[in-house]
Amino acid sequence: MTFSGRNDLSHSPSLVFRAARPADGAALWRVVRSTGTLELNSPYFYLLWATEFGHTSLVAEQDGQTVGLVVGFHPPGQPDSAFVWQVGVLPSHRGQGLGLRMLQAWKALPANAHCRWVTATVADDNLASQALFQSLARVSDTGCESQPHFTADQFPVDHPAEPLLRVGPFSREKADPV
Image (cartoon, rainbow, N blue to C red; front, side):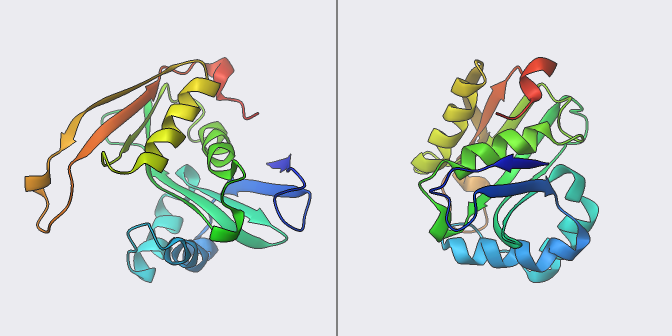
């Protein structure tokens, strides 16, 4: 799917949002590494993810370059939910609303459009991610609630708790991107 972008989104007036493909694995890894804030996994992980879960993940491209991503999947046993694991935007494209636009396009992917709930775990100190999911709820005219999920003592290293954010319910009419 292609959506017209705003002029302030760099060189090109358009962005392309699409499901990830196996060939995107390296680009996903590079974007996550470039953010400087996301937890970076191995290149193999992103290649495997793009191959096995590409249909539930999104790539944002501008002028043929990957500038953002939404890595997600459907939790087993929760067919009406889509889980967001990582949202990343290149530093050069931040502050322009791309994260929200990507989440809306990700929710509209054929593999995710039927889902009534968008979920993600977000640490209490990750204010940017919390604001992003609250914005998704606001523009979708739905709710965003937080509930305990992963506690700090469950991690094998020093890591803050990660409550579960749950955005929804979405109706089929609200699955379309803006």
